[in-house]
Length: 159
Image 1 (cartoon, rainbow, N blue to C red):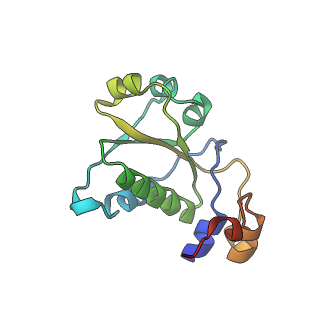
Image 2 (image 1 turned 45 degrees about the horizontal axis):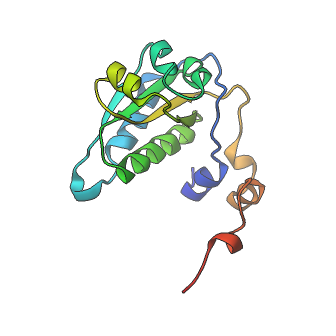
Image 3 (image 1 turned 120 degrees about the vertical axis):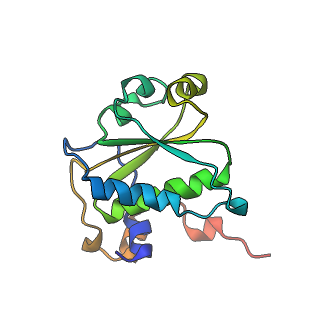
């Protein structure tokens, strides 16, 4: 898929079909995080796959996001911006495979850390969508125009 099309057509999704993610697709998602650039190449992350998300679900704002997911990955460690970069790479790699995703806000960091064995920077949920969406059904420009986002004119400033 064209990168701009992938970015423009990707939407966070919280409802997942009851369908497993194949091992090769899971590997590609994780590897997309692994190859992400990081400050001074520190690679400050560990990717923790949560096989049974019931306990961890109680630590996020929307437990159903984790409970219905086919794959839950916690990005564990400290490093700020680098974790966001890795998460976005993982979510875009997933979307390229037809897998949707959602980042999950952490409401109880201490409980999440106790479960994961380290500080959770982000928790991602992945799965095939309940209602499939075809990214090539529209152009990237059409997807962009349909996005519920502020127009560039309100966001861009030249100095």
